[in-house]
Amino acid sequence: MPKKEIELRLQSKEDLDRIQALPRGFYLQDTFACLRQCLGKLLVTNLEGEVTAGRIVEAEAYIGGIDKASHSYKGKRTPRTEIQFGVGGHAYIFQVHTHQQFCFVTGGENISDVVLVRAIEPVVGIDTMKQRRPVDSVKLLGNGPGKLCKSLGITKDLYGQDLTISENIWLADDGYIALDENIVQTQRVGIDYAEEYKDMSWRYYINDSPFVSKK
DNA sequence: TTCAGGATGCGC
DNA sequence: CGCATCCTGAAA
Image 1 (cartoon, helix red, strand yellow):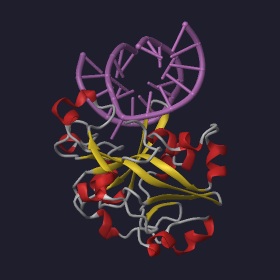
Image 2 (cartoon, chains in turn yellow, orange, red):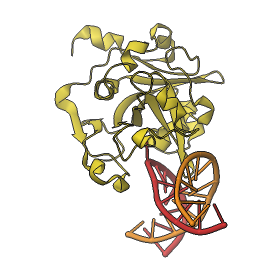
Image 3 (tube, chains in turn purple, brown, green):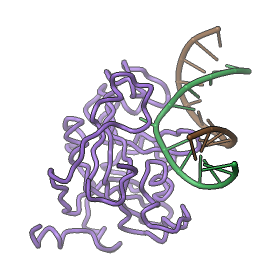
Image 4 (cartoon, chains in turn red, purple, brown):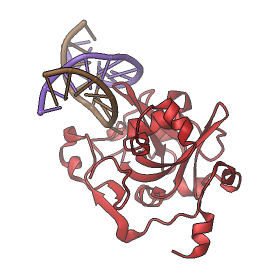
């Protein structure tokens, strides 16, 4: 990797000052472009004065209109899914059993696609993350969608936040490059009910990362 | 490997 | 009301 890119990588909390939130244009791309390009980006939260960030190493696409695994399959609108139908770049946060999950909305108005963030490598605020989610190993802070939400402090309070302007949660690019040859595309997790859509390879992860949820 | 936990949505 | 779910940790 070129030296310049290494220097751009986020090393400390102070470096966040020069890390800008990804712009609207990122989220208006095709959903699979968003899925591919979000790998290696930072998911940042700033809550009650505590900044935490993790590098996204695993994510999945949910294609609202056609995807039987999507909460907005066939355009289904409920209070929960409403934000999916707005413009891309907003936070879709939902609960499964006792855990939260974080997605970002992609595409323009009335396209209800989302990308679910499934795993992060902790980068900034690891002490804060461990306070929120007491575990022995840093690896256990972000190797699952519910785990990373707990560590980053993501709750439904952040539902609908605009990730391009929010002071509390956003995505950022610190110059890290996830190489094509290091990315695995495979079936999504936990959607056995989705009939033919359970076989779609809409889960991407960084193969040499020890922080993915499962291989 | 099984099972509880408990918000959301849906069908009765 | 009953049942299922884009998950996780504890128990066996």
